[in-house]
Every structure is written in C-alpha cells, then in structure tokens.
Length: 405
Ligand SMILES: [Zn+2]
Ligand SMILES: [Zn+2]
Image 1 (cartoon, rainbow, N blue to C red):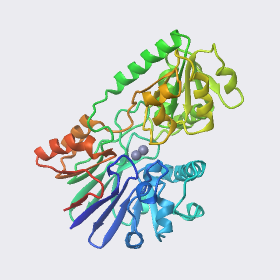
Image 2 (cartoon, rainbow, N blue to C red):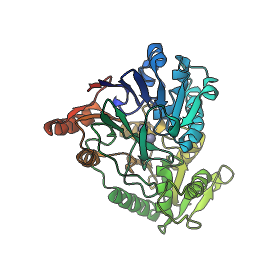
Image 3 (cartoon, rainbow, N blue to C red):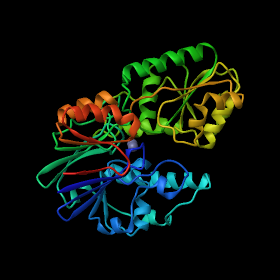
C-alpha cells in the first residue's frame, strides 16, 4: 500500500509538503511555508514530532520558500536525517531560509524554531537518496527538478513547480506514471505566455508614451530574468536593478539548466541604491524592473512613492502576492481610492506554473490512475478535478487530502 498525505499544498497555494509512506519507508516531498504572518498551524505544514521521527528522507524539488522554509521547523520537531535535492538547489536553500527569517522578523512575527537550526540541516545530492529516483528539469527555477519514484510496483511522479513556457529555463519531458502529484497553480485559467508578454509590451508602450513610469516588481531570478531579457530587446527605456542584471549574467553560465539566449549588454540602465533616487525623479519615463515581487522591502517603497501620485504611471504585479503584502493591498481598488493613489495597479501573470490546459495535457501524456492537485485552492481546482474524475482518474484536491493506493 502507498499512502500520500498532503500536509500542506493541496487545496491551497503554498506550504507545499507531501508525506509518502510505503512498505516501511517514509519520505517527505518538500517542506514549505505559507508566505504570511499568522499562527504556526496556518503558516507551516501539518508536521508533528511523530511524523518527524518516522521519516527516512526529505526530498526537495526546488529552493523557493513555499517548498523549503519549513525545514528548520522540521529540525525543531526532531528530524535529523538528510535533505536531498540537486546541487544547485542545495546552494540556493540557505538564502531562501534567511529571506524567510528576515521577513518574519521585519513583520514582528514569531518563528516556531531556533534560527540556529538553519546551519544544522544536512543536505545531500539526490544520487545519494536511499530509494531509486529519476529526475528532470522543471523549467521553473535553476536547480528545480521533478521526480519519479518507484514504490510497491507503482510509479509516482511529483512535478514540484513546473513550467514548459519559460523563455530561458529548460524543462525535460515527463515520463508516464501511475500516480501524479501535479502543480496546478493556475487551475481554472488558461494563459498564453506569448500573449501575456504582448500585453506587457502594449502597457509599457502606453505608459512610457504618456511620460509615466511602469513599475515591475519581480523575483530577482526566475520570472524576473525572463522579463528582463524580453524587455531589453524592446526599444523602450529600461531601468533594471543591478541584482537582476547580475543574476541574468550568472544564469547565462548555467548551461545545464538554460536554453541558449543572448545576454543583453545594452538596451538598459543599471540601477542600485546609489543612483536610484536620480532615476526616480519626476520627468524620467521608463520601465523599472526591481527584485521584490510582493513589494515588501525598502527599495519597493522608494519606487512606489515615486509613482503613487502620478496617474500616467502604473504598477504590474506579475506573480503571486500573499495576503498582507503591499502588492496584494495595491491590487485592491478600494484601498487605492482610500489612500489617494493615482497610479494604476493591475495584475498580469507571466507564467511560471501550469495552467488548466497544461495540467490536462500533462495528464494525457503521463497517463496516471491517481492525481493529487496542488498549489491552488479547492475552488480553483474544482473544474479540473471534475474533468479528471470524468476520465476515470481518481483526482483529489484539498487540505489534508490523502490518496491510498
Ligand atoms: Zn516555486
Ligand atoms: Zn511553489
């Protein structure tokens, strides 16, 4: 018997963590947080001391906080075993854990673990995993992998976060499997990446033609770099924060993870804290790319203050915005009216996950009997689970969901 339990992630959009149990073996797939300041039970996965004691291994798909930042909490609960991931993910994880800890402190939240735990975690690359695993690149972030495991004669495919539409990152085709745990972040919508970029170009042209500033808060890697490369090819004034430019240069060296691309050497102005104020003065029009997708940091505040009273300026939120973050608040029109904000703020998703059609296409290829959807709430997934169930697939989506096979 194989039992898969979502300790977080299925039926919600974060704290991804799945417990896989079979023939005396117990494995945790990812161990993430919900990017909010709230009580432990809401922010962290449903882990217990008993679960921590029962685990043989923890396998991590990629470094993002919603897949890793509960690792020090798992250590607090007593887990002392190894954490397995790609070498690149192992390198990235500490900076994401630090980012999470800083975010909690800055927002006067409490950590349910000792910060020292971060340095005590033991990582190993997946070739040392005590159970056989096959993996492939997920097209979502450097180091990100999907995994195929074999248990009790069944194949289990865990996609991690997956995107076949990245301009830069390679994704490997998925193998067939009996059980599929799949990223369904954009369930209930269909997004054409090419059209999304065309819309972005249109808005950028309008805003700059009117003399305004277009703010693009993005993650400093992943989607942020995709957008930097795309925008640098357009004939528009582009101002990009230096960490995004540096990350793009670093990415161009990661030949094993990327599609061939030309690193832009011109067509943009590099911005950092020494010259930011100069470029944010009134009268300077352009597209401004900075690495803070939810606008929680001081630089984001500085950018926003420069445009808040200007009705010719705009902000585009292109990714996930957690409850309580400035990006989320600004998307609320009532909030903008109440606070006299003249700049327009809108959402335009640049894909880094699967949409409804992607999930259906993948299911057709992977041909599973059982599917667990994650990274979107139950309401968004309801149409998809219905469609899959009609195809005689046992599909589930929900908090604390289990699949027993
Ligand atoms: Zn991710
Ligand atoms: Zn994720």
